[in-house]
Length: 485
Image 1 (tube, rainbow, N blue to C red):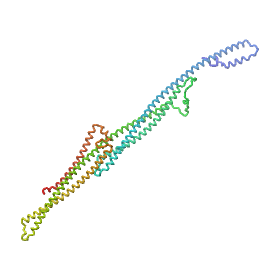
Image 2 (image 1 turned 180 degrees about the vertical axis):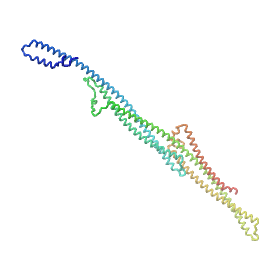
Image 3 (image 1 turned 120 degrees about the vertical axis):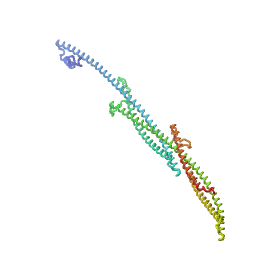
């Protein structure tokens, strides 16, 4: 074991030994003689002291060399440990930074998607509002029909159903826009947190890279900016676990809102698609009902016009018949007056000559027959006058009905073209897509529409035929006996 610094092999303190030997040199008297023993002992002691000094210097050099080697190894190990720690920290920070950048890009993209969805909702809401306006205008225009035409038909039911559907979807659009605004606000908050965390991560990378670039040689001047030498005495250091968990919480929260936003967009797109399909289907059915109503009104108006023409023809024939009956009646009045005059004159004969002979009987029969015929003709004229009055009333009713049908037809045609079409033959803009949804459904829709039109026409024709047969039967009964006169 090497001797301790400043001690001999025997453990003598060299400092104390120097003081003793130096003080011993001055004890001799100057100019005097010393004993040979002291003289020899003094040299031996000085040689021993020199040897001790040599050993002490050698021990000090060895200890210094060992200390230098140890400190160099310790410093090199510490520098290596710090560099490894910095490299690990840089890698972790870079990884978290990349994750933040990826997540931030997703959040920004999702915000853009939400804003695009909101724009689509607003556009869809504008179209729905336009359709609501057209629906309200149609209901308002249709309310101006004549009282005779105010019926709760398929067109009115379809308009009311469409009104409810459009109002419900408009309300859902407003709720969806409000929900999108909330989702965008939440994602903006997440975006702000991610950007703040990303800025901190970028700053931390810059600082750690600056720390890693600091030279070990103190003689080399460092080029580190003074901004890195700020002191954050108010910041409480975090543990590595809490440092990572803070960023992971931000990422987890961002992914939660991203998933929620994706679900919201999917639900909105699904609702828009369903509402568009429902609206197109409703518009197609409404258009079919309106066109069927226009066709039925036009057919009914034509039937009424035909019936009016037949009634007017019958009026003309009845008036002609009345003229004939009146002429026949006037023709019978002269013979009746003659027969009555003859009978009255013949009854003026003397009492002796008053005989109920063949002349008397013939004159009485002639007067009776002429009076009966005249009465029958008068009754027929009265019946024909009554029937002519009924025909006039029927013609007036038919004329009023036709006028109402013309007004209803004009209103229905105007109502149909409120959606922007220029004529009834043009397809409605709001239901063009519904006709192209399925090639299989178009023939079926047209067939059902045609069947409804035929059924409506058949029902009205049956009613008109029954009414016409009844009128003809009454006319035949009233004027059936006039032909023989």
